[in-house]
Length: 322
Image (cartoon, rainbow, N blue to C red; front, side, top):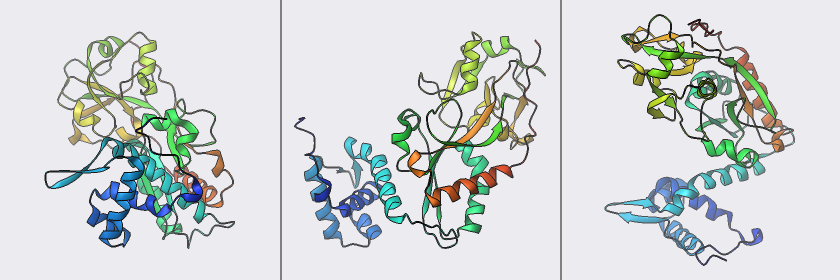
């Protein structure tokens, strides 16, 4: 066994209060603030930190100047701890029946900023109306959430992600979208219609640009023999219009985001000059939630919200002849 690894634990000997203390310490990065968040005394949380340090054989919190910072191990524990706490809360909040009007359950979805923009406001409004005491947590997903599949979804209620990334999990189709091309209104190298030669020659703003993380539209470009020249790479969609405006860069974004742009944003919305496959957003979840009454209610609520979404009004996104 690795000498630096913590000793194995037996569940019968595990103090779950330590897990709550760990989450508070990782979140607050301060013993005093963690104690206040937990409603405990500072000596009690200091004692918990000492036990955690002995278990992990790591300081977890280290003083840097006048503040505390997380050690590399503690940084790795942040997401694991959140998932563990969410999983435990889900176990003990389960009930044979579910009453949305009285539930205090927290529903957690892993989403992109795109999905948050499209779904966030109407879903939060519907939840507040039907389950006023519940909480909606919209957390950004990562490539690891996709690669991890079912194991990554045990501690959350679902992952909102287009088809093409996740397999072998139950899902609910939510809404359709399409890809459109953004170019600056004053980009002299793009006329009324963009061509494939334009896309090959122009610099790009790319959303993700790694072998394990890419958008379907970018992958289709590569199948046409065009390797986009990524001048700027971001891992979210909302900054893209600002990174295109006033430059020669172009980018592909979803039409539902493009619909939210106005004259002051400084970009034009064009149809891509190639056939871009359909974009179908879906909710994916772990099979253990299939028959959970609360989760079934959440799925129905999300379906109602997405059914009421407005139609896409951005440019039709069809291919253009060169």
